[in-house]
Length: 317
Image 1: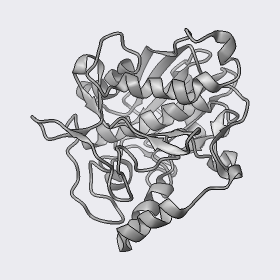
Image 2 (image 1 turned 90 degrees about the horizontal axis):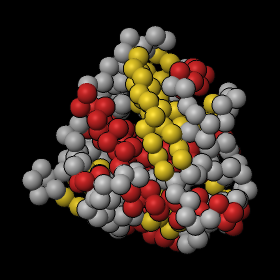
Image 3 (image 1 turned 180 degrees about the vertical axis):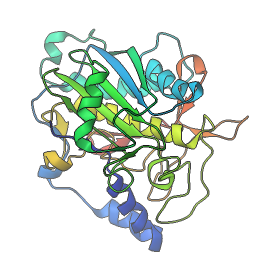
Image 4 (image 1 turned 60 degrees about the horizontal axis):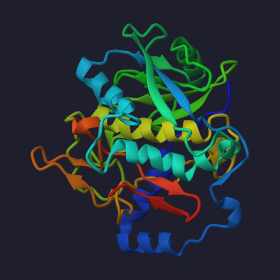
């Protein structure tokens, strides 16, 4: 199996734990720390996914139509032609292109008019969980292959809340890797609603560790699905900027920090351990968000993106 890159749940837990005793001290420690050049997130002269990116989705386990719509509408909003109020999902996606994809090898030859366009290619359901409800990481590439990803595309494997995946909740909320022989990437994310919402759906659930601030209201009303969107966004950002382990990353390949995982727990300006940052609030529902979907139909909370040029976390709000 190809090397995989996980969402850095442990990094977020560490940040929340730092905050538990003294938020002020935790913030000062973060502000005083200056990483060494060898620790910075840099480009390793490899492949990124750019241009047309077809995304194939495998729904593993039972998801309602409304739950599926939360994720599929997010994917369609990445590069939708329909205008959206600012800040928007498409702005977040454009930032990935500006900070990463346009800086990769071969981007200059493609020209500035090359648009990284996401297309929802197909959706497949396995409601009966043909491989069982307790999955090993080694089984994920086979599930991804079932989605039949195209070359240069992404297979998105989403597991339902009653499906256990090796390491889920303990060390990861999702991961990405590559499909052998297909020259495609895959992403896996689980629904944490009944297993670990405090770890994988924070700030829409009280955290498992650290300061117990009130949970924020999720935009869709479904804590598990809004948590999935946050982690899908993070893993897709990693998959397009570092699909085969030689793109943009920081640290050792087996535990690399990437475009979003280098900014754990940051969703808005002013964020610090235990506080997601300054977010927009829907006047009608009271839900917290930082990005509008296509045509303003849905709202989402998306992770900050690490800016390699400034070594800061770039947020939409």
